[in-house]
Length: 85
Image (tube, rainbow, N blue to C red; front, side):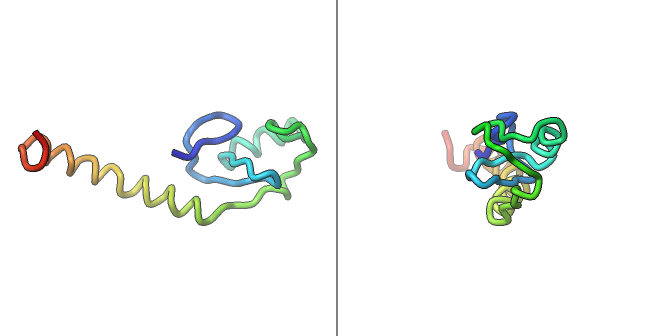
């Protein structure tokens, strides 16, 4: 599971800073509105230092799209005694 370095919550729209710390986009923007330092390193951090990690975003999207369906399918099999006992 991928989590925000600032809040500890699951990432949906991930961005990373120059030190490869990942944040939820809206949370780090909110943080940088009032602070101009990294919450992890204490170094100066600007909005322009943030980059969207498209590969991670794609992984997260696939997980959010398919995991509920896979989970329900496995529960269906479990309840009907197909694979699990």
